[in-house]
Length: 617
Image (cartoon, rainbow, N blue to C red; front, side, top):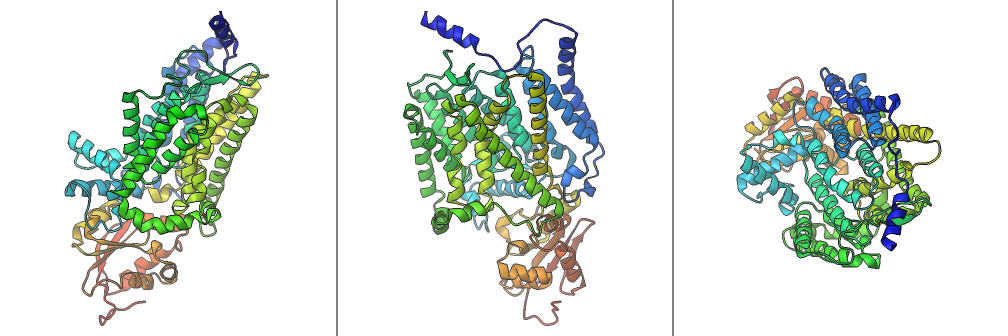
């Protein structure tokens, strides 16, 4: 009788979204529109990419050159998803199709438009894999790339995939890493959300919101993207094992644990040996692949252990996370830890400085980038404000693990600035949970459903619009022409071992090939006095930067369009630094042009301060 009453009470709980009603012309039109919108939107999207003038990108990147048809396709896709989400006649396959369509539109657009690999850090990671394959393991004399020897998990796995598939370079598949990584992330996200609720609308609405506000851009070919995928998978597995993990909205706005047998997998029984082994393997892979993600993993497991009822599940996972991290840091990563231990301790003493480091000054940035920075900050603030409002307005979510996992990354914001990026990483690691809270706040049935649905649709479209400001507006420097990559390859092919490679900024594709054979200098990364000298007189800054080289050592200077774009967009150096240095080098008899095309130039020179006849403007 008790079970019958429980099931009756459960059935009485209203579901998000309308229940199927009698058929009619309106419902038939909605059914047709829901099925047609997805293929129509995808065709519109592909047609919009036929003639995009990439050379016209300026301080707002792709936003300035994508045609209206692209944005119309995005609107059609969103409207179609809203129709399918609100109609229970559509199965999960249609919802997954729409989400994958959104992933394609956001993340596959640059892959389809650009003739070369996007983003210079992806080029560096491809070079690391190439070096590790050539050396069959850690790369000696890594010249500033030692950190990849100490957290090699991602690179070892990528090299293994290349050997198994017979692929000779990672450049081909690295270009498709953003859409692939986001598509792979869909499975653990669904696993996480289904561990918390059975509400179809809430689950898929959360997924849509997650991809609509994930603007940080840590999805390219990198250890962070790989480790984050493993982190979300681990989180989903752990949350699914928690006792009473799943809850749902009841008629009073409170929470009621699910009565279904699958509400929490084996509540109170801890781990089976096989599943615990899988958890430990995930944790080991995370600990060996990235330096920050293991700390986020430990923080998440520790916060989930606060409620006593969770500890039978979370303490073994926490012990594994701590054990793997300490073991790895004390052995393979020990050189890095020893070298940076003092800076770690110093950072703990200035939490306010760590938080402030994420808010970079915008005075020297391009006008469009100032706008972008404020849009990014506004989008982040809106997500956290809506998530906080959910905790107040939807009491049932406080009975789940989601608030704990949303808060878990926050302590790291005060512990270290992570090169000014900690605030972005905190947002990234909290987003799977904060997106759920935002969806739980917005996707709640109530009075005036049509008006409420319209408001929710406007909010969703606004959030999605904010994502494009964060994700597409630095493309002037993230995009490389074939001419630029050819110049980088020509420089590496020409430069002998021991040569000095100099660039103004890091946006020099191909300049890191064979990085163990050359010394590299980025003028924008010099210490403050030398950087100020470079801003005043680029040639003087260049000669001061390479003055350490023994007499007779050749040096190669690569200048290209993307480096000039970097200076213009970020203000790291004056916007005219690259053309000024090009003019100075071209006029100096000590510089020989090795290669030149419309987008790049490579000079060879011998930095010898005491050589006669060498002029320094």
